[in-house]
Image (cartoon, rainbow, N blue to C red; front, side, top):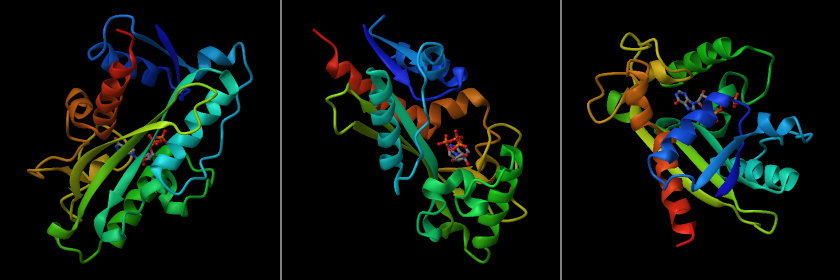
Length: 220
Ligand code: ITT
């Protein structure tokens, strides 16, 4: 069995990823361990996400947690790319309203202000030109000798609704209330039942690609 640290302090994410992998890998092939479980034995420091791409940030986290724990590590970075904004908000998705700076706002305040900024910046842009995608990059670092982590990228396509049409929906978080899901553009990702979003999402796509790569590394 391969033990892999999942670079998250959120026990819910450990469960979610374990469930996805359980459906795609042989029984007991891998075991995911959250950072919180290790924190009782090791002092773990969170690295700064200073990269210019999702790949850089996911890699920084995977390599750094492997350095601190000596274990294989799986890390992810995600966000929203809007074509009419040249790919912004991109790697600063969670703090877009403050140009990527941490400004002491809680998540709810940030989500609201980020969404307002996106809507304002897309003023006058036609529906066809409001295409966007959620991106999730997962990086796997396979031990202390592994200089370059293995990377996969999952995407979830859609477009940003017009003012008046969005925000809509009570599920999800972040930009979900603005994001009309392709190819029909009838529902926002905040209107999808959580199970449905978990099948369609960028995270699920990246997890499936990562499971394929892990399967090819298993003995036998
Ligand atoms: P922190 O960067 O504050 O830890 P996070 O843990 O949510 O936030 P992610 O990399 O998962 O970090 O996502 C970064 C941001 O991208 C997130 O704060 C949202 O604004 C946006 N985002 C990512 N996935 C999303 C999704 O499924 N639905 C809506 N917004 C999403």
